[in-house]
Image (cartoon, rainbow, N blue to C red; front, side):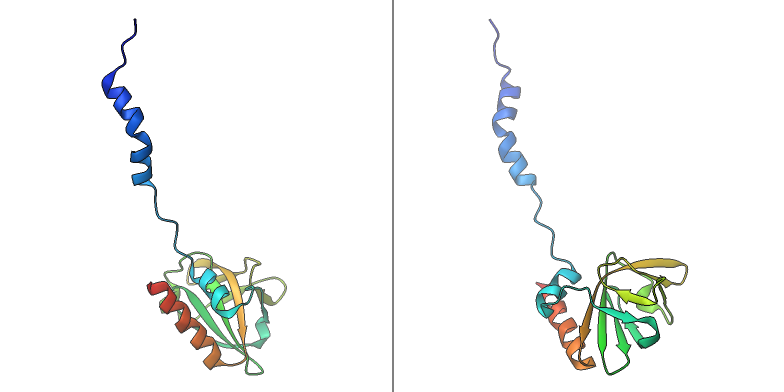
Length: 140
């Protein structure tokens, strides 16, 4: 007659509880996810490279000043550590247009970063208010 192995039986009984304790928290929404929520945009705006007059950057996003008083916020697919200190960046696209959701690349020094979303605003103030709202949500 087979006798149950007590340590093995106990492990099998406790396995669901152990696994539940190891379950990780769901990942926090990304900067881009929060920007979509705050702006109610899909992140697929476009800007012509010739319309870009200036930019500002952080590790999470790039603000782009366009012609006709438009402002854009580009979110990044992954963290781009060199971006926060960059004096120049290069936008790489063969269609002379940067769009969100297309995976356009930006060159920062000797590395590249991929754009995830691009959001359009009527002016600089609206763009920075959206960024501020997203940053407050990210702190939670």
